[in-house]
Length: 314
Image (tube, rainbow, N blue to C red):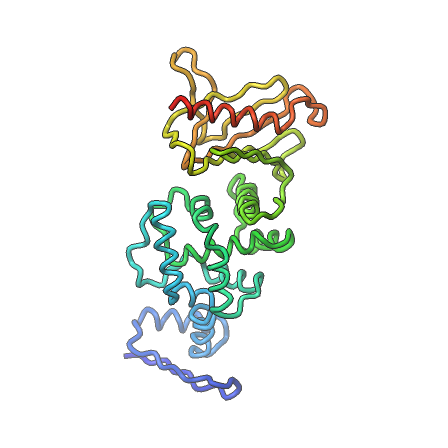
């Protein structure tokens, strides 16, 4: 049996000693080696580790709040995936460093702050889960809180959103930053806030279309996002032919490419929906963007007409 004991710290009101018993020899070796590396007594090192993990208010809320557990179950049911089987483990959706970054950026102090964020952002959680965890087979503990914190951050100013990218979400994956900004703007739109990226929006009873220019796109290159509303039929694997314009080229992104038409020898370039969403790219063709007579609004209306006509035929 191995004990690790910390003595009370008289400089901190309410502090207490903690004795850890029956530690596996492997854990003892690791803690000794890590404490030596940091030039700290083993008890002090373990105390610091506990402060960073168990003492983090965001992690504690994820692991102990019945409200988070309830929202996690609702989020999983909404996107038809399972919760992680071992709900008694300490594995959470957010890492310690991510929790600490959120704590600093959003000024989080206690459970009251976190409960307020979770409740205020409840209407946006399902959208965030669908976008963030598409393709996941299971959701980890605290997924709902992770999404609530993202939605809270998305409603803040440009400077804080940029800090969040650098400290929490930065990724070297292609187009990761644009996907991040796209989701931020989708949440901002749901919150009735101005999007951060230049573009236009079109909406009817069945869909919402957004055409915007990410920061790393040159003039004349646009990202197109099409989201089907709940009132729209499920398109399944059906493909829709891409609208053709004299001065613009519209191309479905990888993963959303389809082939429209009945004759295999005369298939047309098309697009399809995945999880009721589609992404395309739009380019000006043979003419400068500021001289293009085909407006972004015309493109959005033509695209909406194609989708609505396809649904009418289903």
